[in-house]
Length: 167
Image (tube, rainbow, N blue to C red; front, side):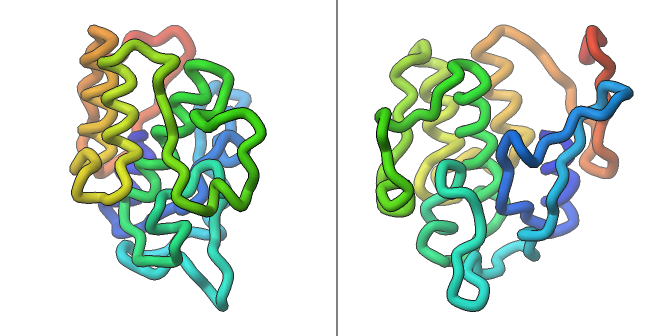
């Protein structure tokens, strides 16, 4: 989340947040990799007639080839968060790529209502309905879990050691 916040503060949108693009180093640090699909904030998500991204994690704007901003990464992080919590995508079993590229909405009913509401807002169809920033999404998520994480300023991504208490 802090790496995305850092990228967004520099007007860079990753556009392909998914487990395969999050790397755990030997030192135990998480790194976001594969910035090949990244664009500047409010750039079209379609390049050369092709939509860039992975359907399971793509925001509605991205699926339609519209302008994308930080909300595209927030949407993907919301889907990824659900996947980490449950081991499943928030779509019905057997959902096809064509359906994912349509207007199917994720469902978070497998989670407690407060947590489902946080993920529903993070994956809202428009950026105006989402959290204003990734930081606000994470704060809402941690609040529901009765946890606290004070983010560093967006000037530098944070590093967390395994077992380290976040303050």
